[in-house]
Image 1: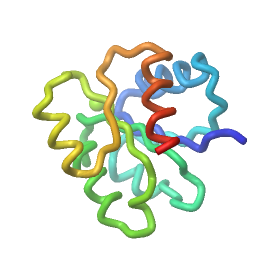
Image 2: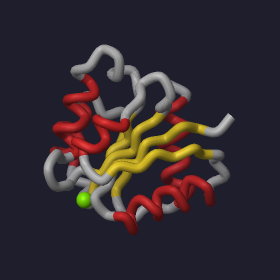
Image 3: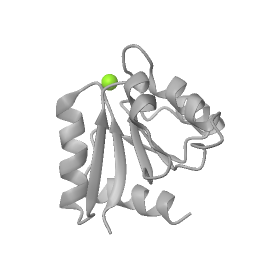
Length: 124
Ligand SMILES: [Mg+2]
């Protein structure tokens, strides 16, 4: 069965790159896209979404605020979240982990690198 994945990024190009990478890595996906945290919260159905891949820097509601909202909602808090970041800074990663992010991927990434993280958080 296809993996229902929500991809949250303000960049359309980046969303398409994530989709392409997941497919290139051989993952069968059924994607939903959102361009910021507010749109993502509106579209996020906890009964169907199995994984969230979210950007950090976005207008209106950034990735960290979005993660806090998801983790603060008892119906949604079980969904694994992978964060996309431009910097590999450990301080930022620690902050994300403290707020319930399962793992992170620094941009640019390869399909293989993304797949490893997806497998890890899905099988946790
Ligand atoms: Mg962004």
